[in-house]
Amino acid sequence: MCRKQHGAAFATYAQVKKKTLTISDPGAKLVRYRSSEKATRSFCGACGSSLFWESSENPEVVDVAIGTLDVPLDMPIYAHIFVADKAEWVTIEDELRQYEGMYVPDPPADPK
Image 1 (spheres, rainbow, N blue to C red):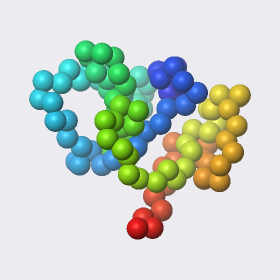
Image 2 (image 1 turned 60 degrees about the vertical axis):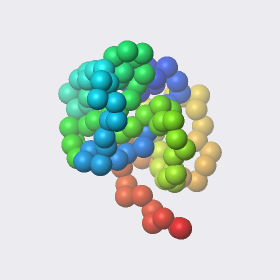
Image 3 (image 1 turned 90 degrees about the vertical axis):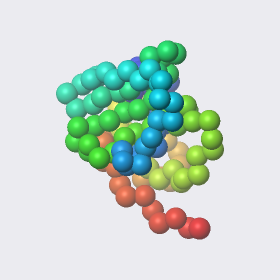
Image 4 (image 1 turned 135 degrees about the vertical axis):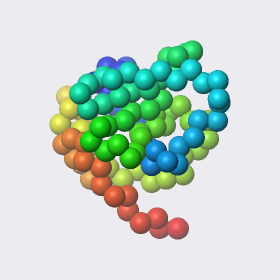
């Protein structure tokens, strides 16, 4: 579903606690779409950009489509999820942890 929704080999998200996320544009045309029994996707009603992904299995967090950010993302990449659903022509060649589905591990300690 993520590949079809993004039109790419995979979708890249950063997970944040919902209570820490704010939308600074009070006139934002945020549209929510229940794409499956467990998932809700949000996108910009003006331009169609994918913005958020939420799972009913983990309701305290929201995944932000990081390709939409206007600022650098200062956080480490720590895992691949939904590896069982990856495109058959994609080869993962890094040493990051891989999870078959929606398992989201705790991020490693910040080395800074």
